[in-house]
Length: 264
Image 1: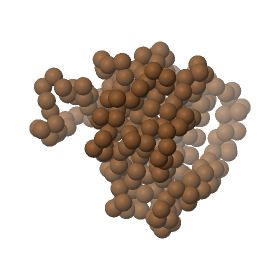
Image 2 (image 1 turned 90 degrees about the vertical axis):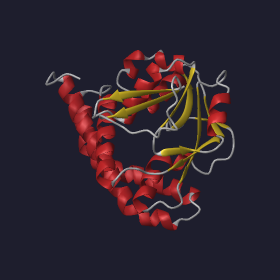
Image 3 (image 1 turned 45 degrees about the horizontal axis):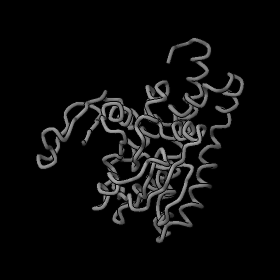
Image 4 (image 1 turned 135 degrees about the vertical axis):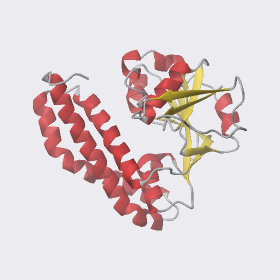
């Protein structure tokens, strides 16, 4: 069963892709983020396991067979490798480094702390256990933390492989980073008091520096062609700053929720 979830109104799917009884199309609000679309698809699904991805990730020839045959008896989720299109420009490489560098150049099965929901298969019932979190969207880091607390494991499967082909422009990806950062800030901020949140807002300009250091080291060790890393640096810095703006905005919203200025 294929479920296509999209934000906005009116999409065009190739006629050879549509097969009666095999594909369902679900329309979400125009302002829906990818985790909201994943949520809608997971809820609508009928199978006991669900594979999730995005339009930016093109499956390899073996992807479907691998997704159908993964063994989820001992693992709550199985994630795969994400390679980047070698023809990508500097902006697309920056997006890849920011989002997927930790899931590249891995050729071995291993128990991992994190997988990318852009290329993963999960036990559906284990996701549905957490309705309070799911109503906000399928934000995979949150669910991975919940899974770990109950002793569940995530597995990396190198044969579950996709190619990242970026569809974002610089402006639209910055908007996405701000929106995702804000959602992260609100969720994280719900755990802290107003005084600590004010301190976190004050320290938010340091966020790009912290992430840049981690990403640069990871990319420098994993990328075969390091020249693309240096070409991508200006975009990477811009995208990290956009996230920091969103995260600080989320902390501010969390303070407002606590003070009853407006409701979630």
